[in-house]
Structure formats: C-alpha cells, structure tokens
Image (tube, rainbow, N blue to C red; front, side, top):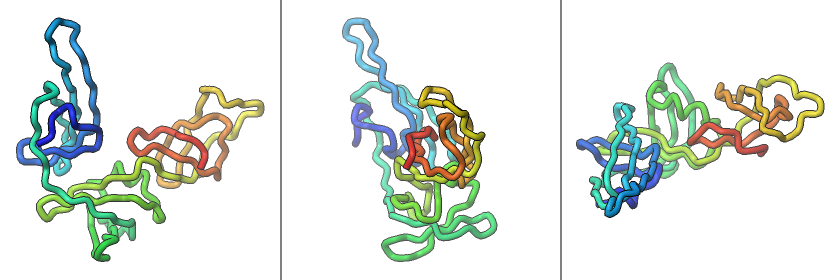
Length: 188
C-alpha cells in the first residue's frame, strides 16, 4: 500500500472503492515542534470526474487501485463517440466525447504516447504524454519590435485549445504545450 509521502502527480489510488488520480499535491510543514508534514491532495474520480480534496500525514496509507494502462492511438470520431485503437491487440477503445473533452483539446491524429486506463473491465480515462505538439491556426499579428518578454497574446490551436503565447509568434507556427497545465512551452 502506498504512503501519502510516496504519491506523486498522476498516480492512481482507490478511494471509497473508486479509482482516483492525483491532480495536485502540496506539502506543508507546520512550524510547531513535533508537528509532521501535511500532504494536501486534489484527487479526481476517474469514473464520475468529481474532485476530492484530501489532507493527510506522510505515513497515512492509501489503497492501491487495480488498473491497467494500454497504449492507444486516436482513430476517428463518430457522432458522440471517440474511437481509439489499442496498439497491442488492435481492438477498438471507445469513449464518449463528453468523458474526455479536456483531453481532446491536446489530441491530434498522429499523437503518440496516449495511454488508456482500464479498471474492472471498463475504460475509465486517458493519460496523455506531458507535451503536445500543436499547430497555431489563429492569433493576432506579431508586433514589430516585439521581443521575447513576458507579454503574451491568445492563440487558437488546431484542436480549438486557446493558449497564451509570446507576442512574436505568428499563425502557422508549430508549438509545444504542456498537457497538464495548458501552458506554452516553446516552438517545436
């Protein structure tokens, strides 16, 4: 059984017999003598998509979750369904578009490294690679003399995702985006 101090972002544990993914982790150390560190977790239920905030000590135990990661590749959309192909046995993995709407903002046809999560015979979610390479389709024109300062502008990417990019970027450029935070990382 994993301890709270062993968990990191992206780990999956069982809470109330439901799989939960660790989305955020903050550690606070009280200044009082003998006080132990407190771990503040933000967990997401992978079946209902609800958030759960949990605070515990470092040696508190969590129930491990019995699940499997399977490499998948995006295939196509059909009505309300999004179909992926399991790269191991070439079977279809189907998700409802509403269940994976956040992940769809980063997924392109040729994206590699996508993992589907299988728990108790049911597909419960997707795990994306940490970086997505996306094409800028629309943004304001660059300003003459713009430098690589902290000034940004919104840019619309090929998937519909809108991110803040530096002023010097132009349409038709290819950029890298962090799939966990949605932040611009740099040109590809």
